[in-house]
Image 1 (cartoon, rainbow, N blue to C red):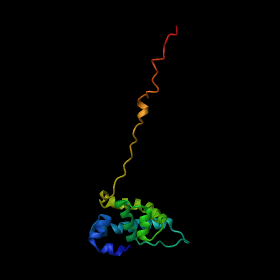
Image 2: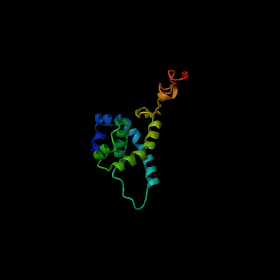
Image 3: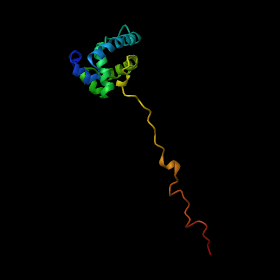
Image 4: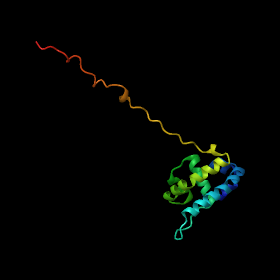
Length: 142
């Protein structure tokens, strides 16, 4: 995926992230700082450098939250492994949410609501099998 081309074209950036070029430019610096803190936290001397720049990572995470594609699809688009995509989405989602809230763009992300479970139909009502059979009860044998 050519992320540099997406950053140059206003329509493509809006389709992918929901942001205009000016809005994305305003957010990317703070996102880069937040990702830099994450890099320092997870840095190891023996690890390989990551394949994605901060802009590419920003586009990946925004695509995930805007369109909810599978990790496998994002892995194909960004030429990564699905486990790497999941790891980067997990690591950078908190940073992205914080930056979007700080810049008043949190409306771009769908809020996660708690699912309400439906009460079981058998808890409040007795089954017809549980009602005593009046035909055979209290019958006198002559």
